[in-house]
Image (cartoon, one colour):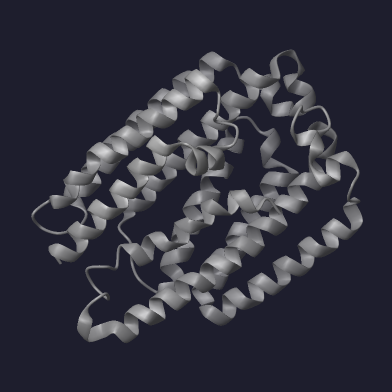
Length: 289
């Protein structure tokens, strides 16, 4: 179920975070606590759903994983766990999590169904279609943000969805680049799609997407209607820029893009940029609401 990768599910809190200047006031603490409870519930649901999907993905990828120097140690690929009981657990998790999602909020349940369908489509088909595979990965990130807004029944600026989508697309392209660079001649044996990419193509695509992400976030900070009118959110741009450049450095210099969760959990400069972004954005949203 890859618990380390559940860090991606923290994106469901993004909508909660950006309600700081609306619901988080001293005279409306009941709404704030309700939002926190719903956000935590959404996190639990998505941890269960993503864990179930990872099980399914490991079953479908078992043969290719056996050719990978690290993934071959995964329980299903190594033979420590057979596919049948793993799939039973995955189905139970999906049914239980979707049931909980609809209890929390029907719209959230609908988005959760969309996430499951998208990720299952990726596991069984889309991961073998060049370019569509990285868009499918990015869609999983965006759906987490959408789900976080749906469970609270709050609107979120389209700019935020755009920025999230571009950042996720860059992460997906970087993942493919690192997989291809590490695999070398055995790339097609590990994953069919790797044989259709080249490092040059992935570098060009990553450059386009990274530039677009930086420009989009910069525009978001002073055009989104739900942000303070004094454009103070622009103070967060340097942290986003540094985080993007740091990620790019780690991908190209250390080939760490295959496991983005490791970068988030182990690279101190990256962690510092995230903490500073959160702290600065929270201060702007609260101080200038």
